[in-house]
Amino acid sequence: MILQKGTPAPDFELNSTPDQKLKLSDLKGQRIILAFYPADWSPVCSDQMGLYNETLSFFRKYNAQILGISVDSKWCHLAFSKHRNLHFPLLADFEPKGKVSKEYGAYNEKEGTSLRALFVLDENGIIQWSYLSPEGINPGADGILDALEELNKEKNK
Amino acid sequence: MAKLNTPVGPRDHIIGKTSAPITLVEYGDYQCSHCGHAYPLIKKLLKQYNNELLFVFRNFPLQESHPDAMAAAEAAEAAALQNKFWEMHDLLYEHQDELDENNLMYFAETLNLNIDKFENDCNSSGVTSKIESDFESGIRSGVNGTPTFFINDKRLDSYDATYESLADAVMNAE
Image (tube, rainbow over all chains, first blue to last red; front, side):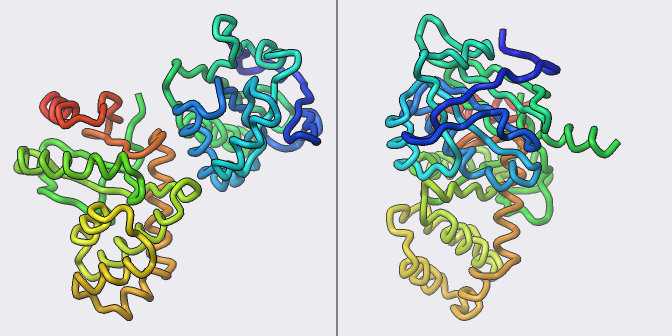
């Protein structure tokens, strides 16, 4: 089962480009959307990442930053990201393979890839929403935006 | 099950009677080949079910993948301000590979639009905000790619790029 609401998000440090690493705990104070996905280049993942690329301005409105995560290598991510003009980081859960995905319960042991799972973290790094999408289905962005809206409501209470 | 988050209203472009029992909403991108594929299927569907169906088109331009999609959407919305939305919509889908700026102007001339007004409207904030609000309503409704259809407010997940999948959905609409 993927990690559920109320769980502190396990920290990690992964390559976001061939020469840069990104540490989750360095992003505290911002809301984070983690989008685990099976593979660069596959049709559904490409559509999903392409969609998030178009919705960055909506995420920003809620002070949220999206990070894509798969087991592909940093060089593969670089090529995929350039090809699709992606404007958000793709993290390489490459060595040890799938370690972070496993910690979030978002790893498919049989295929050796991340599952298609979404997490919304609040400013303190606590998971406030998580969703495991059925294989082959692009979950879209509506669930993420609903979760972010809910966070705003709670904050304003 | 994803649901249409913004009901059909006066700002929408429609074909058919608002009293029709079945409403089909498409979120589409003029440069998307899958939408181009669906275009004649919708035409056929509208012919077949013309009394029962209300068809609505909303903009969902994926600008990073389709560099001409936004300009094309603007052209359709600008044409709408001269009551030629559907004429422009059809021209765009019939010439999907030719959506550069010169051709958009040529389409406007073909439709006898007032060119000065058309050019101004293409760049107006009103047109941009219409497209953006369509896009946002799509995102909030669970549009995850184009085309995405909604039948009576429910996202149609059974569409498989065939006419039959659309016709079945219309016939079985609640």
